[in-house]
Amino acid sequence: MLARSPVLANVHPRERRNDRGRLRRRRHLFALALVLLVTVGCGVAVRAAGTVTLGLFSAPKSSVRVAAPGFAVVRPASARPLHRPAEEAIPSFNLAAFDTAGQAGLGLHARSALLVDLDSNRVLWAKDPHLRRAPASLTKLMTALVALDLASLDTRVTVTGEAAAAEPSRLGLSAGQVLTVRELLYGALLNSGNDAAFALADGIVPLDRFLYLMNRKAAYLHLRDTRFSSPNGLTDPDNYTSSYDLAVLAAYLLRNYPELVAIAGTRDAVLPATDGHPAFYPHNLNHFLYVYQGATGLKTGFTDDAGGCLVATATRGGRHLLLVLMGSDIMFGDGVRLMDTGFSAAP
Image 1 (cartoon, rainbow, N blue to C red):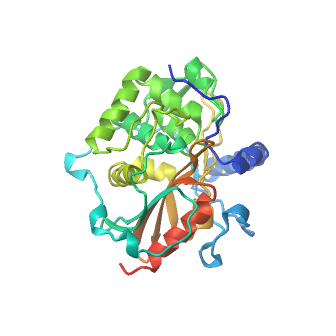
Image 2: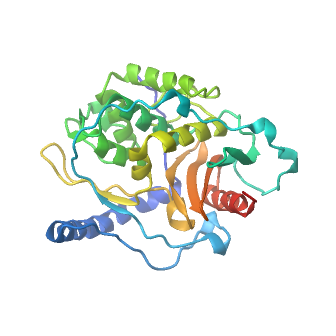
């Protein structure tokens, strides 16, 4: 069994305070949107208007935007074969060729950071990229990846009591409910649901087997700074990784798991009620998607031990950049500053 701390959170405290009221408002909007979808049989794009105030996450105005959130109604699709990416797809980044002494001092709050160009695999900025730290909910990227290695998106999973009890960030699962892997992935990657991540980990194979496979995948990807002892990132001294390893993991996911890329880039989703569960309305807690022009994914994380953690991708002018931040108290402000630095550099 996994040991859990009673005083932990996998989302930023500001997000935790506002989630309940925001979720109630979104449920009414989503219900109306779902009716419209069924009536006219077409996709719906939900667009937000107004002003973004970053507050603690202050950033240059040129990079701040109000996003047009992607909206997804999650419905069953035909099962697909198990995902087995080609061995030659393992990415790597040449830190030895990067001069950290000559890089711009950005005043980042993050304890560790890495910025890479995904088109050339070139390192653009680095700060202690091999420093081992708790990754908080960034752990769920590996959980999602291993789940898709084991099962199709439409594999049905029964929620165990232990999964349902996972706290504090939750999709809202109850023991005995039945969801598909696809639905649980939305809950784990958007809502950062610890219950959804745990359900993936102990609902497809036994939990100890799933954790073994997470570490075997880490070894396969040559993630030498990484060890997993949790499927959801709740603080455990044996659950750690580095900015470099997370960049490799994210780049591998981006190249080989298009389903996960699409889910992680979705702003809001509706999981319609079925015989196995009530309706759920996951909302993406990755605020970088909303405030950075060109942002496309992936995941945030927060615990008291880990601090703010962010893996983010963005596209501008045909360029594709990936950043990783660990241990930041202003992760979105750090993210904007670092991503702007990358896009201002020569390709």
